[in-house]
Image (tube, rainbow, N blue to C red; front, side, top):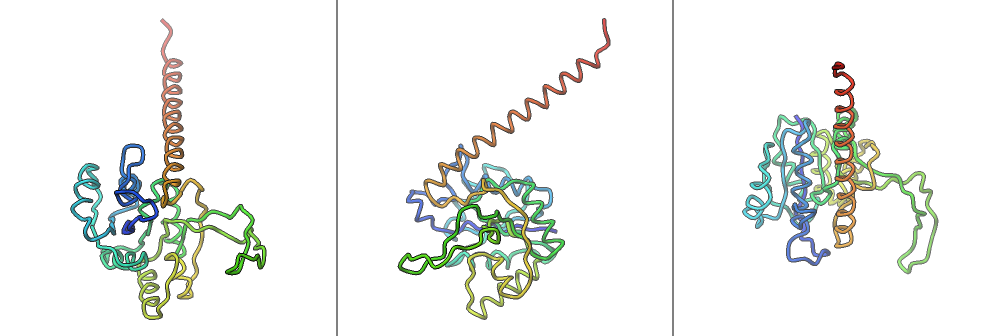
Length: 253
């Protein structure tokens, strides 16, 4: 059994909008609805734990869950003061029958199904697997004054994304250990690394952006429009090939 913990408990202050960023519309649908739909359509996902601000439960049921008519079981969990605490809260509600848990940012709506499946498969093989993309810019290390200290070898650098998938007991152990040690990680994989367990990477895509600013939202709109146009063209090509094939099979009059 595979469960997903979708984290959407942020306040979204950087977006400077009336709504929290996860509820803002993206091509006619809330960002969070688009994210949940990917997991709803993934055959490997059996359960979704959605972590949101506690005061948003009624809003989320009314505006996110009910209109979309999701079939997958979705539990609502109140978030914490930090992302790490919110993930921890979500993990506590994952069913014990679950063997793999997938943790994903609610504001990454452009994740593809094949990437999600690859991450789940990787975790099943190694216990911990994340999506990441190789760095392509030149990377500089600088001090507090902005003076460059060194140029990093970008061939060794990967930019971590979500989803991140783990053996359930491993990620629970990593979170508990971090809480005891007072360790704060920037993602869940870093907590597993801190525990001393290996984490593997599957290559993601640069379109899997995290929407945190108005600029990100505009980029996401462009990327989604391109994806929808490609899907429509692919569908048209399939119909054309089928029509052509059927015409060739028609017996002559």
